[in-house]
Length: 541
Image (cartoon, rainbow, N blue to C red):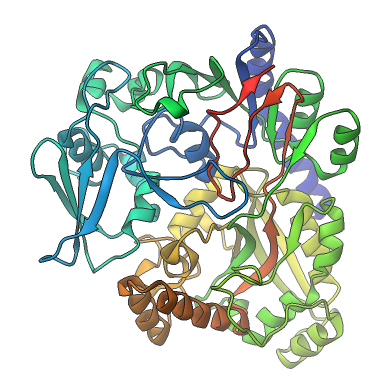
């Protein structure tokens, strides 16, 4: 596929996805009264409302921690340090003293769902059944598809009374509390009120969160209203209403912000940042655990099995120039973890721009600009955490061409790319792609490395898309999972990351700065060092 055809197809796909978004914008324009926060998301559709939303991390940000609460949450109240876990529906949790694979949770008392029903342990059981128990009448296949990559090790769960809940994992797992931040809690009565139909439930979603569902149209918008009876009085939303609008095109998001159709946008177009600032809009950024890479297939026939090719591709990229392309809104890729983090370690392979060294490595592997390596890469046209995927991937495509690697793109809508990711390299839906560009959040010890590199996490059991396998690293992953001493766990993580970089297991491009552009009318937003963000402190003035 030529670059010209690719661009035309990308534009056509973008135009098709913008039509419903702009319909939603036109409706939203009439609702500009004080107290209404209108958000332009990067996704092509409103995330699902079942408590385990699709559309990646952006789905969790806007349709999980808004409508729902989780057993364990992130403290998103500060911008000056990484977010930490905090009690939510569970006030306490600890491993079982006699059963090391079991975690026990003490539930918060006095919490009520939006329909007035009291939260009890049976609701947590129902929520886990909904996501994991395939023979349950209320099993939701879509919830399962989204929950499995985030919480793959759960094997059993149950209650010990009204306010006690337990979960067991396949192996001893010290990272489980982190994973449970992804699972919103629903209750059986709400599902029954929707006719026992998860499709119908989308427009009648009921949680315990700070926002309540008013209306839902997947292709246009969702409207949430303040939960005045929220159990945490400090987090009752300041805004009366929250309108979520899917606008996958970056320039369209900027246009919507400029024209007053929205108040808050994710990932503004980099070339618009300076003019937005001069027009009085605020550009908010912060460091947070998020990298932008290509995952490289490790299956028979993949060119990325050769470490010389992997290293050559990494040496071909001028990350400083890419940073300029993005208006400075990135940190040059330094691995899966940025330098200075305790997990970064001391890798010996330096991710510098050295095209001559890249050509030399490729020549050793049998390739050259005259006899290029040809391969396909799966990318998205937009989407949660993907920064600016089209210009960034085109930049990499040109850089690789100059050293002897010809890349053809297969462009997927964001949620479709997630399905490719979950299916794994070599799956039919991957359409022959031997690399996949998907952002990754190393929030915790499991998400950082194990879920994308551990042998038993190979798709479809997990999201080790590349199907990488190293028994020796697997032993270290097990040590990390079972280690309770933070300093020792950090040392093991640093050991793994040094290997990941030295073996060039990914194409490392960037660390995201999570940019947002917001109207001067938006007051009180604190951009946490987290993938998740709290919209409850925001007022519109």
